[in-house]
Amino acid sequence: MKLHSRQNFTLNGTVDENQTRIFFKQPITIKPNSHLEVYWVSIEYEPTADYLTEGVDVLCDLPIKTFVNYVDSTPANVAGVELPVIISIPPTTQAQLNADDPTTLPDIAVITREPFTPIIHQLDNNEQQINSITFTFHDRFNDRRPVDEVDLFQISFAIIENPLE
Image 1 (tube, rainbow, N blue to C red):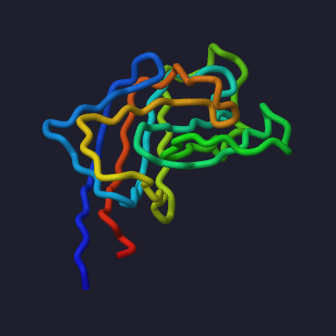
Image 2 (cartoon, rainbow, N blue to C red; image 1 turned 90 degrees about the vertical axis):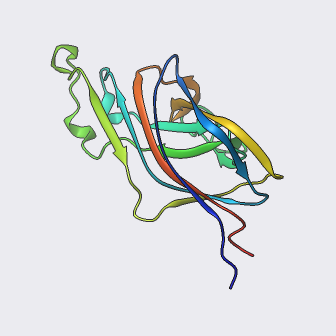
């Protein structure tokens, strides 16, 4: 039985102009063909009208290959687009309670997504060292629309070295 290296991360950052870049004190080595397991994500943002019906895609600059097809913004028969989506935060299940009156909106809203099982991504890479990770935020239904309302961001994930060997 071969033991596999596991690097656990819980990162948080302040979001400025749709992105946050988190620097490490020392370089992180990512072995070839590692897996990325995402455990949970949380965002704090300034809600706008219809905020309960909106979802957020969290993208990162790790070598993730995820294909998405935004049915609302493109015809349904168009091929998917490759984006490095680390995790999606769907609209809240309380969307029917949404308030259209901007005077009744809370000052701050927090959405946390913790999937029942971790989201697993196969990293398609050669061995590399990174000093930082950049996360960006986009509308879940239109990848061309950045989400600028996010103020704070937290994520928990692990990089597992060659888990299939």
